[in-house]
Length: 322
Length: 309
Image 1 (cartoon, rainbow over the protein chains, first blue to last red):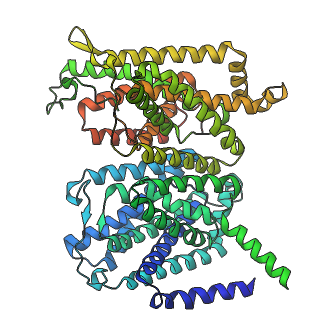
Image 2 (image 1 turned 60 degrees about the vertical axis):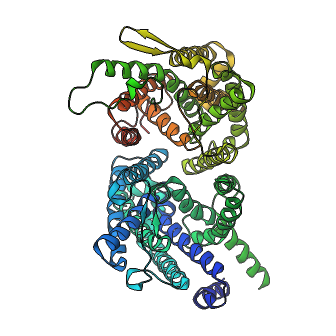
Image 3 (image 1 turned 90 degrees about the vertical axis):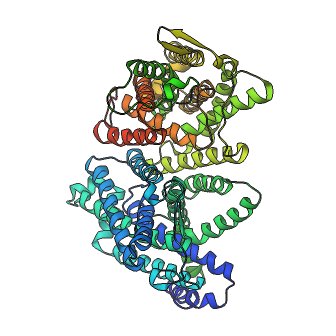
């Protein structure tokens, strides 16, 4: 297993940073998306995977981070390098509100899912009706190519930025998992009443998980805004985006450090290819049908996700070879 | 969700201040109550499925939209009026619900809630986006010869289409009641809902009962879709709004309570209809989501619910 870990570490630390010089521009875009969605899936993983609080409204946090960074940059000239933290903080504030209401009022399972969906939809409707931020038409950022405004001529800059985001949040989750915090979250997921009885302040830890997760997702929103340069309420606050985030963690393996990354490496190329070909044929929604089928298949046949299964296979191979 | 009927008077935005016409309010109330029958039927389907197997059908609104598209297909291709075609829609959705239960839901009846929710989200995604692929994103509405007339009742008018929809929904609800309380299969369904293990012990084929219950729930929402298709323009994403409306109703009425679903359906339809009198359509959507949040927080067990979640 250690040999496998070393190989994986070499790939991540040497191959991925060097890769763009070998890639064509499409591959750079594809990998940027893989890293970015892995980052979002990992951020969701903290509250949705480890703590087991199924949020189906993470698009709300991304949308708030995106709009905040974009509006501050365009209207006030504040650099998104700072604006992303403002956006993250506002997203965390909403996360705290949703978490407080959900956890204080004891909403579990279906009820918590509905609460998160309702908040995301409320954000979408409010954004669509706020003319100051473009309403339903959307908010557009003029491209200047100024790195101080988080804008880059060279697509590889976004590649590295997304890579850093993914590695940083994964390192953070790895550290948290090994610490008291991660253990408490898993305990809450497995049996909340039992962990409460053992003296875990479940409310506090669920809140922390929610706030951290929404903060990170808000930062991801700033990246999204300055990568895409246009924000539409229906796409940044919409349920399909929440599904994009959730499905990567679930397919890869929720509650594991490498699950969301694996999930993104599986799904992002699939989604991009599907979107590309289906959109050309005018088949809108086809990739969401595929997502739905995948979600069903994973629940029925691979409920723990792809990563735990893969890790077991690798371990067996290594054990067999030794 | 009750906006969109032809007569212009109802849709005229209320003047600023407190000069809202009493007739307007009465008309909104009447429209809401008539629409409520269909809402009740939709919610009864959801509450029946939940009551029997404790699974929340996240695809409920999408199933309703499929009922609407079937009614639309029959009306445009075969000239079949939706007020007759609803029978076909109910039958088709029964088949869909039965199949979904047999192939998918049955496998996760005892799984953790998270797994059930994810599976049903998957079903919802497939249904909504298949509709998008097949029928496209343009809003549709079914034309019905019966929907062209109104009856005046003093200062108020009664939409004949709404009246028929209400009547048929009430009739179907009565039939459902007869089925659940007067037939052996219906009694088995209620037995399995009360105590699945006990029902199994006395020889009930619980798996079959579950599949039938899911089918009947889907048939209810399919029929509701057909009945409402001339009144409500729809497109694939309408499914989510209808799902939210259903969740609102069954949570207000109490998850799993049939009576609650009836009362809740009328309440929510009246609230939305009055909302249409006072508010912009986009804000009306805001009201239904805010309502959902408030209900979740303050009355999650509902009015008729037997137990808290």
